[in-house]
Length: 214
Length: 214
DNA sequence: AAGCGAGTGGACGAAATAGTCCAGTAACGT
DNA sequence: ACGTTACTGGACTATTTCGTCCACTCGCTT
Image (cartoon, rainbow over all chains, first blue to last red; front, side, top):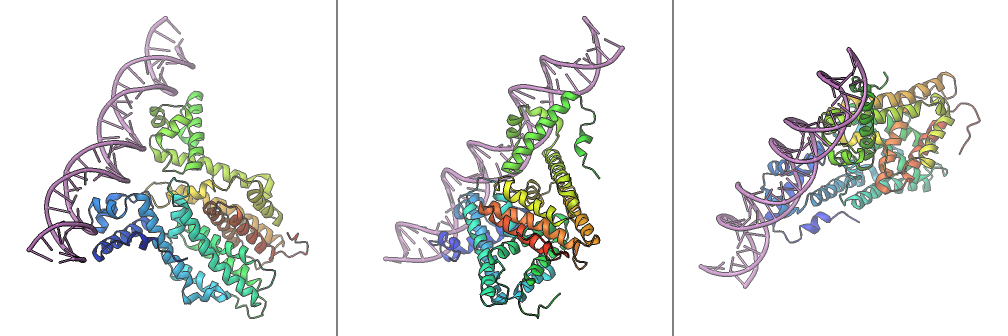
């Protein structure tokens, strides 16, 4: 269930070695986040993390293994964020509103985009054998929304005609697509619009009268 | 307004030269479409188009210029498709429904994804100076939806409270995000869900009673 | 037909980059 | 303390890949 591939690979490392591995991972994640996968090369990671070439091969035998570790790193971050108490399992409209507000108002600068989304679209077509891992992460992400929406329906907060699975996909797609558009336009507007529209759509299923329009 | 960069570069080419250029472009577009930008190298294009190395440099001095030409090529295709009579300017709900049906039912295999979308997210973070061109294309794409929706509102087909700009972004984001999710999941379901939900949302603004639910 | 420019071919050069090798250092267990 | 194991450094190699160079051919014009 929980992502722990990073720990798997670090099982027989001493504290010092593990620290070095973590340092490489941090910097690699940051670089990939900012420059993309294939623009992040050996040397950049090496210099950023302050390690020698052999250490990369030592902790991450191939670039693919490094990318995979970064995916796990980002996955932990994203899934952990969505599972935090802040959103209470996404079983209220307010939770979804808070979620969109986070990205629109205070979120990360739009230039960077969603680490996982852009990472995914950059890799999906390549030979890198990370597809399954990515698919799993996105499935879990979707599941967070799905469970919350299903609960909302069972509790009668939204109408029985609402389709939790469909709405979950809608939210995820609105976020991913909106992020892409925001990146391209260098303007957070499209993301804002897409997420607002998604929440608006969710509101159309709300059964009670206090729909907190806005 | 219209995309013509390709013609710009081909201004002083003889028919034979132009034919060769087109051939390179076709195959390059197909390769990029299927394998991504950075997995499509010199040699692949050369062999696919049946040209020698020097010809690539002759017609496209740098890889960036080739990518740019492919973007224009794809842009013409996508924008032309959306401007076709089939969708009548997207000024009816049925047009949007037809549009989603096209991608969901008969559309291109989901593995490939949207040429422009995946192309964009692969390039956006790089140094390639194609950002402006991509932004322009997406802006035009959005404008097609926006104009149609605005017209729908002016004609009273949807409620005055509907926000055409927001809805346009929602449709584009739903498509782009849905396509990404479909690629990752290797299942067209997410795209189907996202687009269906988007159309459902549009329907909530329909003023007349014949809403053709489905 | 002769010349000139566009078009073409294949080999080559230069640069970037992933991954290896081996020697040297530090840390841990006994 | 000592040996084993983990850790580190930097140079090196192999490969990929973009782009160039120069010789050659084709086709149009006069």
